[in-house]
Length: 144
Length: 144
DNA sequence: GTTACATGTAACTATATTAATTACAATCAA
DNA sequence: TTGATTGTAATTAATATAGTTACATGTAAC
Image (cartoon, rainbow over all chains, first blue to last red):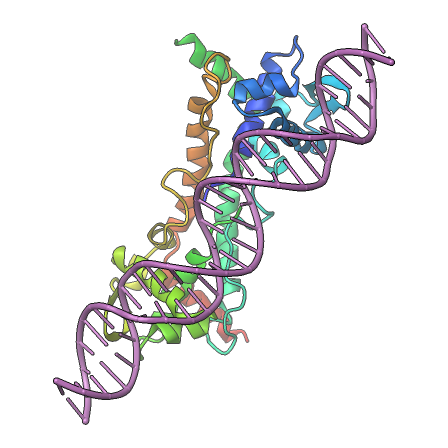
């Protein structure tokens, strides 16, 4: 199974809001770039708002960044859009048999290891900001 | 989303086969420890067999390890049971708008970053062997 | 060769998530 | 008041998980 593309879409949205900072980033505008429909964008924007990454108001067109580009990491977005349950990237079978030596110890043995693996992944996301994405897109575009 | 517990069950199975190496690890025996049913165990064992981590034969009761404990990493198990598509822990929206600056660059910008995050996670799994799990269970049990 | 038992698989179920979509109430600017 | 936008609920189709039943296939032992 894969982590929902809500995360990638969230990054796309935030980056595009910045590129379009002199314009109005309505859900319809954003949806056209992502290539999906506005309702889905609004759902994701709602999550980003809850995490205080964007400002957006009912009745008023357009979303704006609530923080500086350099202060929003991919990890912030990842957590905002709720694609992985807290500390549960890996699910573990629930009721191993306590009468068995392995059954009664396996969870406390592997859960910390799986947690370290998850944190290693999240640490990478935490080291990249939307500003990095922004700059990289500028670079990539230059080369075209 | 979470990664399927097939992975944790796979680790459980391999560890238990080792603890039970003087006995017969039938799918029914393993299922009792995992606390699920034998058919599910056989399905997972089948994947472990395909990855050459266990030996098992139709008609003959019991599965055995095909490699030394210290030569089986959690990453081997993770790949064997196919819980995450190759290099696609993160899914990315498929058809961003090429007419938009962000749309036509976002994929090639974020995919390498997401790949680095995934590899960081997998590297942790690659650093732990079933032997480590085995030893840790021995330790945990001593403390009880 | 028949019996007993185990593995390998297919099929089916219930549940959950994703992504797409429609619909509409609530909100605000002009 | 009008027109446009956000917020949100509901629906759908597709896919994955985990559990389960059923049975053909394969092997050993009698």
